[in-house]
Length: 114
Image (cartoon, rainbow, N blue to C red; front, side, top):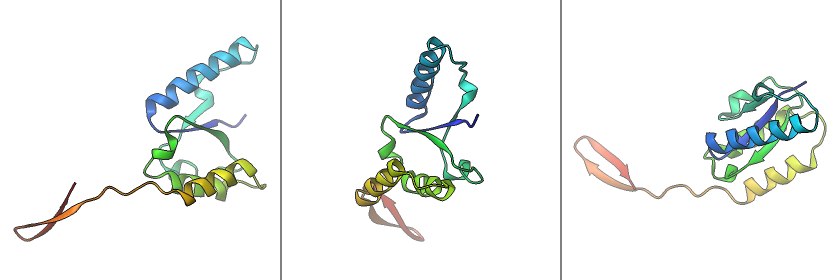
């Protein structure tokens, strides 16, 4: 069985979802363990996977690297996946706003401050 990828806004959100899902699977007489899941923090974790599957939970849209994670998922997906295509479109159409910084002169150059 392939691991279930969990893409969440925070590690805590991912762990909460994994525990609930594992408990639901256990009650349904399916074997379940936290080792059945992988929390995706970086696109590199998806490289080399073939046709991965998983879930987006919590505040996943707020991840600073969500576009790169979704793009890596699309590269690893063999057959067209309508749900993943919708997520990609959603992320691409509504990019996460970049924090506004102001350049301040300091000795030897400039520094960006919020």
